[in-house]
Amino acid sequence: MEYTTLGGTGMEVSRICLGCMSFGDWGEWTLEADESREIIERAIDLGINFFDTANVYSGGESEEILGDVLAEYDRDEVFLTSKVLPKHLNYESLIAACEDSLDRLGTDYLDLYLIHWPNPAISLRESLDAMATLHDRGLIKNVGVSNFSRYQLSAAQHVSDVPIAVNQIEYHPYLQRPKLREDCQSEDVVVEAAAPLARTAVLSDPTIQELADKYERTPAQVILRWAIENDVVVLPRSTSEAHIRENIDLFDFQLEESDHQRIDDLDRE
Image (cartoon, rainbow, N blue to C red; front, top):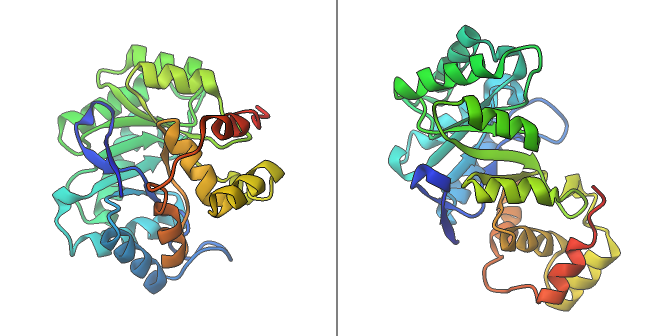
């Protein structure tokens, strides 16, 4: 595993973040509690210390499962992220939503709390004022956003009393958003790639398949390696120890510059 300092937080986090969307019973593609706990434990054993969940995942069950496992570990050794839904972005609701997430996770604080999606019906300043209150109370250490455009991110930075540490966006070879990524990185805002495999859509791309054969890697490994080389933190959804091992086996090879460019050229905006 390789680690990176997450923006202005000063925290060393794994370059792979375990996305916990699949933990809990809310669809055919999700895992039951015991399977979910095993995945989290294996991830920690393999060096992952960065976990991403949200109050909407399985109606909060994902947070409960993650909290149960992390209770057996040193809290200071893990970096814990959750998110608040757009409908809870008014001042009082946002604070209450965070407190509810903390209860489910069984922790006194979140390392990072994200606005899951912007809500044009609620003042962004009001939402970020609530985030600042949570920060002042020590309930969250860092503030982030998710699915924010360049304009929305700029507006958030303008009105927030706490630096924006992260913008979590959909990011993969078919949707690269280079200007948004450049804006984030120039402002020391970490880009986290949600859906880094385009929900499997990119795996069958002929270019990706050809490069996978060349490097004797899986298509997923080629895609994740490309994202990491762009200084993006990836959040692949893992449903087995084999998936986790595949996702972290990225640090003993590098794409040739021309091959990296071939993936850059796949952008469909």
